[in-house]
Image (tube, rainbow, N blue to C red; front, side, top):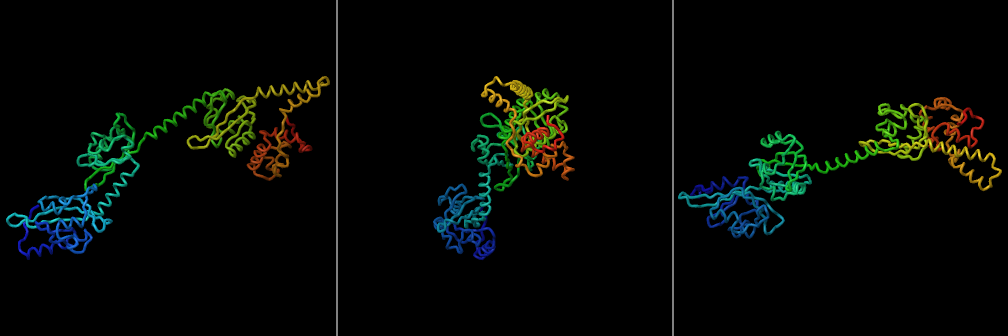
Length: 494
């Protein structure tokens, strides 16, 4: 910009007085590239205290200060701002990094514009460089650049004035397979990040207003012709004094794959559960029945609506004591296997079953998976075998001693007793066992021992676990086989 300069020394002194106190730096340069004057702000921006430290000429200045563009490319001496303005170039908002040769660890960022002051004849008389310190701005921009590049969330930035992308981070390139050249400079119409967005009209309206675009699901086209489901959101920002929009993304593909795998796993479990020929059920930690397979319904004679939502105790298909012992062991050990229980069918018929159970997580809640094996026929066969052996052994005079011992061993297979000792029970557990042998119910035992009913039930469950029995009658048999409480029987074991 050419402006007329005052010609008298008085007017020039007045001009220097006016610009001396400006916050912007001002350097006055003669047409021959001699540095004539600089105000305090210009000196501070170079880290010097007087004009001589800047250099008296453009050549000296170039030897004392290295200048680079923001892209790290160095300026040649003939492209220094002083040389350019001396050639008559007019420029504004030129950003350069200024580093003293004597102190390479210090760097300032200057935003420079030029002015040419002409005499009354229109000839250049004085050259002016106006500098503003953009160091803090550049530092903030550099931090943003580093953060934007290091952010693992995929992102692009478009300029609102022409809706063209000006920045893209590695996360976006990795997610989509685009190269930087395929993104930078393209418009949002060419690479549509809002394609098939669930609220596309709202997103376009907000983009036109330069307002925040809320999160929404969209479909992003990839360079290989496929597409990817993403969550996209837009946040307006000011970048290089330009209104821009930052689009950030979340890749839905990993979540979709995980959901698909989970759904397929659940479907496989459901099919296996439903089609299994073994009676199986799932109940909550509170023993509420959640799932029952067809084999269980066929074995017990119940209908699903009679069972689902009810607790094991409400249905009563397991003896109360056996149920308490089973779930006590499950709560303690998380899994049990090969426990004999009596199962009540709908009509009241009892069947012998062997139960195995394990703890599973369903919707992040612990549940119990119970598998029942009907062993009624096996039990009946075993009993018939033992009865036949006993009948034969009534008159065993014609058998050899060896054969008699073998028959006795076969018989004893079904009469093995647990190895636990009576002395291993606590005093309170022995009291409870004795009262069970007298035929007392839990409430009667609680009254006799002055205990809470729940405490008695806990003692009974612990007893069952220690003795490896599942009912009161089995506990009585256990005691009777060991000759315990001989004078206190009121109830005969079956």
